[in-house]
Image (cartoon, rainbow over all chains, first blue to last red; front, side, top):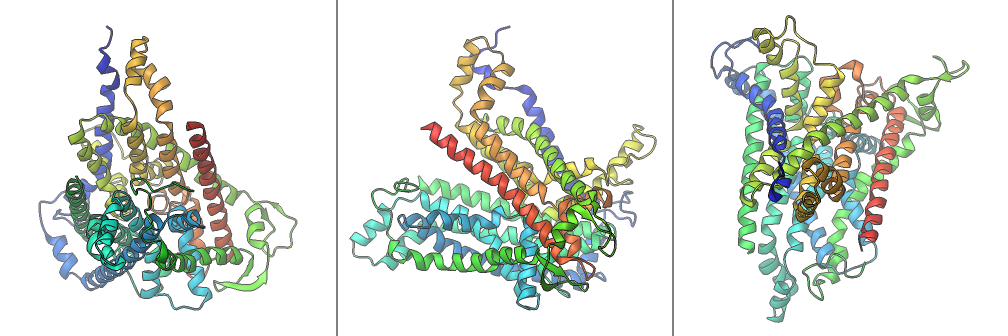
Length: 271
Length: 309
């Protein structure tokens, strides 16, 4: 009856709990994917396979609204992620290669502030701010709000990567008469690249994902994909929304997979 | 601070010390101007008088905070009685967030443990599988859950078709639905830190426990769990904090009867009917609760580090 010594770390039940976990996480997504191909107006009865709801997304009566929302979502995400990545890269270099200085832990707290403040509070505060300075809410207010909460998400992978790069690289470059900016652009920057790319992708997905903050600061007349979907779902889940959701789901999974394998190959080149 | 995060950097990892303030300027400005300042402004707004068309009148008032606790009648001139509605909403939010945290822990711990004890080459794949749903739009995930558990949704249809039920069971707009939604939203936040702790755990300790005639579950309870408790605590905080202020799961899955803080705040800013100072005050209370939790956590971390040395 005595368990073998190496058996003590195994709990067979844990495998089943893990599988249950995956089942709960993926189940609803897979169901929605399947039902998005349903050729029936009733969203629950199965009426055979069809692409009609995808056609509806692209050419149906709401196509113009979805296209505008998709364009807003993508352009906002590109701008917010690019700005946040640049800001975060500068901050990471200063924090990790800038020696120790007064206010360093305060700066770190400030950079992580968007992670600590609950999203709904950030949303309220930003709305109040734009209203207090009488700034017309719209495209620009969304971009600014997105840059703020993207910064910590871009910062984390970039600083983690930079921490793993020894300072001897840029010191060697400088010993060989490279200027500080040459040492940065030609030595440090290429080494940091995997971190910068995953920081950008993270910020990009976080920006695409955001609903609450966007909903508060968007003002009238402008929609992103999440706010358009939310508005539509409030009147009931329609099959074209399921098709649109499936498309967005695919895009997210594609990006995560790319960033996973980019990270993997990045980790390999480090050795 | 000396010799802090300079790991691997050798004697001087301060190549960019000369320009560090310029490099930090953009983050200071952007976060300071567009987040810190707005939060301070929100604090000010919570002490102003509400304007009936939405927005505020710049006159000092404690009405927003008073409204949380006292009911003074429609015109504010009746003797105050205790107002329970808002206290109940806050209490329900804390309770829901706690239950979601416990649910995540009960399911998340075995999952994290299982993944951390896989062979090195499959570990990353398991972790990847757990985190992929997190990167799918939260709104889409919540809507998917709503679709699945509706009264005439696929789950009920299948149970009816299989003869397990006579009539659809009500899952949507219940506390259970909110729990499920929060669990579904934040589970990876529980799994990742616990995984990181278990991965660093020295399994020789479990074997020592086995040599001393502990069975598996005793070893788990008395040896493994205390050793990985920093990861468990971090995971609980990472789930509890966003659950407390969650909006999508309670709003889409919980319906009007299961109002949480997030919906209460949102309602104050919707259209022209809301009460901005009250919404600002509710946000301040939520923020204060979150900061208290984070501060207790930070203090405990610091103490743990001191004792660890």
